[in-house]
Amino acid sequence: MQWPLIKNLPTEFHFRFTKYAPVAAIVSGLAVLGTVIVLFTMGLNLGTDFAGGNVLEVQTPGPMPTAQLRASMKTFGAEDATVQPFGSDRDAVVKFKLPEVKGDNDNERVEGIKAKLGQTFPGMTFKRTEVVGPKVSGELMRSGLFALGGALALMLLYIWFRFPSGLQFGAGAVIAVLHDVVLTIGIMGLLQIEFSMTSIAALLTVIGYSMNEKVITFDRLRENLRKFKKTPLADIINLSENERLSRTIITGSTAILALAGMLFLGGPALFPLVFAMVFGIFVGTYSSIYVALPIILIWGVNRNDEDAEIIDMGGFKGSKKQKPLP
Image (cartoon, rainbow, N blue to C red; front, top):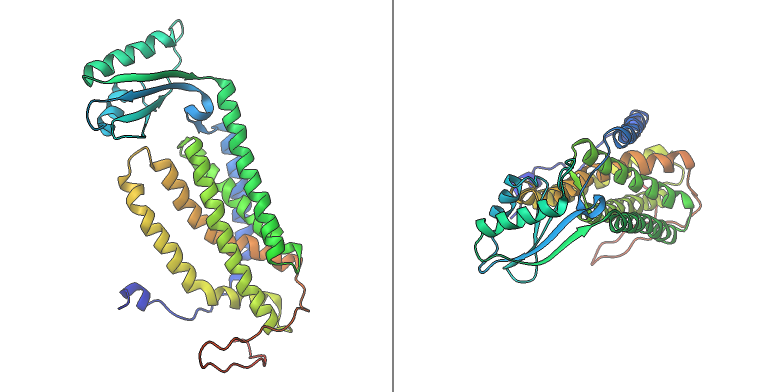
């Protein structure tokens, strides 16, 4: 039994993707430029992990009332408070930044919040109270950036070994993935979504998904390059993308459907993570077609590889003769 949407999905497409590559290049360039402007003018809404703040480790007699605790923190003057349950269902870590007020002592304000929490949630105990200073937050930022840079470098090496016929595949993949990361950071800055270590995890997930799309794209392109040695590269790119378009639609739609519930029902704690992942799926699919492949088209490829081998998959008798391009 097939889903109706999948059953009605066309099996053949005939889009001329390369025709719109110049327009897509302008759009991508403007989007990257817009990201730079947003970062310099608005900046990122850094969470306590990167900007510093206060951390309370609390425990309640019964199950942790996460939603009520988060709502109470907002009424106490900590609108950006995040509540992260851990360990047993009675433990949680509360992270928050207090707005700057001249002449006020942050320690006194934190103690006031603790007193209000104790009144609101009888029996609540405070196991740990810490201040995340600028030194610690700076180290976390550097560690996060190092993780992103290391992931991109390893992906470049992987693509280079995966497609040894030329460096253009690795360069195209890394530039496209970097494009995805930059735009994801830009949309988070534009919407002022909190940027924390959870956001770093989301960006690493975006890198993984986007790189997987590039590998599949390049695999299909390489297969067709071996079959059609005399056909113009632009036509082979269009053929390859049309052949895998239905697979791309199904995979992307499935991933978005899986994340949709968490995006709309997961609450503010999960929203930054899931939003970055959903946006990354869209931009990762786009960059596979209009960032990675145009770099291959401009750079060119080695057309002297061996012919593609036909594998007998249980009775199919293939031919190595070149078939005409549809």
